Length: 253
Image (cartoon, rainbow, N blue to C red; front, side):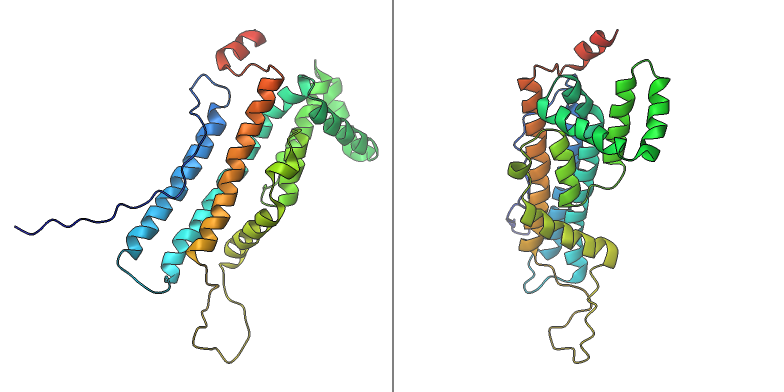
């Protein structure tokens, strides 16, 4: 009989600290988006560890692709998460007299008034709606979530519109670095475009990514999702906005 071998257990890359959301909680959808994002990232991390078992030296590019994918999946999850959050929760903040959210909304309306050609269609729709104000809020939210949220500037807009402590939640330098790497992978396949004819011994056709750096960038993105989720729930609690789905549905009938 062959002797038993004891292998070191593979570590889990990211462990959420959020409390679970039950199915009847109105934040359940956003919570599940976060969990699915973390699950995908952790699966890629574990797969990388498996392929590197017993190996030494720099990771191959096929192995680096696994933690490149970690960052890509995290950023995709961030985009879906924020869009869902804004689409389903921002109007509640505005309608429940959240001063910061209302102020940003009013400024958006004021800026639209300076461009009548952009406002005309919205006004036409509002005049035929039983609740004209909701038409403007809907247009406001569509304008904010129409593009991919993959930059510090875009995230600043949606966080500021929600009345969050934007500068506290968004780590500008860390996010800029993470999105810069993400964009090079997404748009350039991380191809090393150096035209240096004398390719040295360490030259590679693709930008080399270290595990440490890619995990750092990925963690920045996941932490942002988690921090934003907590900040939104805190605002709902402060404004006494009901978060039970069945009670929200009853209030509508």
